[in-house]
Amino acid sequence: MSWREQLRPASFRGVPFLVDDSQQQLGRRTAVTEYPGRDEPSVEDLGRRAWSDSLSAFVIGDDHLDQAQRLADALNAFGPGELVHPYLGTRLVQVGEVSLRHSNREGGLSTFTIEVKEAGPVQSPGLAINTDSALQQSCDAAEDSMLDDFVSIFAIDSLPQRLVDELAAAFEQCLEIIAPGQDLWARGQNLWAQAQGALGQAGEWVATGQTWKDQVESIGAGFSDPLSFGGGLFYGLRDLFGVFGKTGNSGPYQAPGDSTPAPAPASPPPASTNDPSPEQLLEVLRALPATAETRITPVNLTDTRVEQGRLQGDLLDLVQGATVIAGAQASSLIEYRDRQQADQVREAFLEAIERCQDTASDSVYASLQQVRVDLIADLGARGAGLPSVTRLVPQRTLPALVQAYHLYGDSRRESELVARNQIEHPGFVPALETLEVVR
Image (cartoon, rainbow, N blue to C red):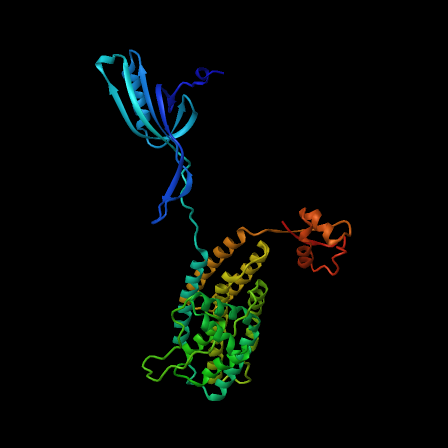
């Protein structure tokens, strides 16, 4: 086929015209660096240059003015348009400068010079909500609300020391119930220190070697200091759980008007080298209802006993609320293996938050509700890209190697199949027993 036979009738946005010549701009984008005292430059290839063309076009005939107006309207329209190029075929182009010439000497002819440039697809920056940051902020707000509420209603100066000691003992028992999360909280302390560049401080925390029991006892010692007790107890809990989010108000509380030096906060627990796991978080959240079992049940309900019961209820609310907030902050450190595991954690959180809201003040209720909303969004975003778990029942007993190949087409996933289903012997995956399979 000759070049004349390959020519296509030119048009733009469906308006035809004729082409006299075409001058294209091609090539590569480069960056040339010339060094002092060196003859050879350095040239970097930055990619293909955007294609452009300068078309010498015309319309001809008795109605050339009408043709020229239709073409001018098409060229002036907003955005890229479809150009049928006589030599290159159909292309999406953006029109640049256009010149139009009418001449009495060339009656019946209107000429155009049209600058066009390659128009690629519009690529807008992707919008992604930082669900982790939103969750941290709502946890910070809930923490502030809980602190203000607790300090305003909690005071032990009206109780005899014997009842205060009972409160302290019950409080320590309550904290021991949530002790399974100590590695998770410690991990938060360590990661926070590293993120702040306080690597030396993180190492110092590890070097203290304080156990969870030591930490709980140091918090319980605050029951002997009524002046700074309320806020001091709150921040003691905060230090115990680990500073996952806010880095600001982490100092000890000091009662208004109290000029005595504030007690130093409890030292954080030693950081764990293990990554936090969903199993740890689930264990803590599911243990929270058991904290109610530490309630003191006196024989005679005197006025002081009634007040002791109210204060212990406030302490239980504080422990449950602080645990939920610390757990929500810790959840951003956790890597979930599948969508079902993330759903399990979400359901455990919803149940725990609802239990806290049952006895919360209006302000604390509202702040916990925002934690709930942001937590659902964060766990939903984390779980969206995770694989799902399906269950099936194999009909034959096969080695795990063979079963993994049948299920995944990859025998190297044998260990994953064995670990997830706790298969006793990898040589025998029993038939007629349900297997969990990640898809």
